[in-house]
Image (cartoon, rainbow over all chains, first blue to last red; front, side):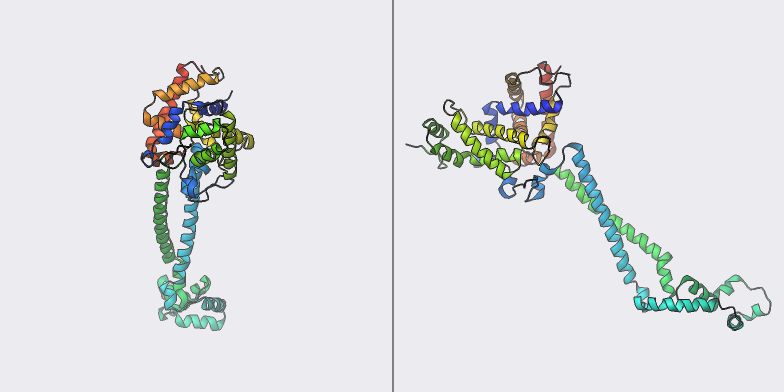
Length: 221
Length: 195
């Protein structure tokens, strides 16, 4: 005979225990009020449905729906972790969207989605301009190069990089107009720092939530 | 002449007399006084209100058939035992192999810890002997531990409910149950059961 069958038999035989033990258990607890304490609390307001789920306060009937043993605990922990992960994702995404939309640089430059769309067309023309190696194009570029360069002197690379046409070309390569250079900053290092900061904040919140959940679980256990 | 208690309900002995007199009022009075108790015991096991109500009705019928010749010493205990037996029968019949929402599978999981590890299990022992061991075990327990044990494994109360009812910590109730289970296992082993 398996242990489960033995346990079933033990539960059955327990039915025949001496009446005084039953009376003692029935009349204990709320003896002063005369109320029979064998009546479960969750029966007053929350009658479980056919599947055994409490229809009232879930906490009162949680035991009835919980899986037995450590399996039930694992399920509850897994549920808490999954919920936390979902909250974290929503939090990060939401905060990131809000942060990007309300970035002060964008407000100052009047950046909107419309200008961004218009900027695409400008970028293409800018790129074309940067790649214009025709005589006219070269003349425009040469006019912006310091005199020392045209006279054959050695010019540090930084000077060349500082020239407006070089910046324009780089900006065009990046897909953003020189005027909206701050946008590339948001997506670049500054944006990365902001994102990391947001993730840290969000993680702190998630930890707070987890602490709350774990505290609740300890209490209910 | 009927005798009423302070609560306006009939005394237990009067209700039993009604059963013996084959008066139909016996069932009505039983329902008034112990209907809620029977429903609660059944609902703990079955978790379905309709099934619990049917079990309650069956309990009155069984009590009607049992008295006479029986004259129970403690009427609520007698009725609760009938209800529990009927509910367990019904649960086994309707939910065989299913866990459902009943408290019974949880109780069985816990009671398995009381079974000695030997080959025989409880096969060698008869029901009256097992009942005697259980009575002896409950007798040997301290009052609080005994009440907690009965509330958990007879009535099917949750640990939380027991803790709230008696103003104890949940961990204390769990510890008390663990010790009681271990004590029962030792007692079964000492009786040579399952070894």
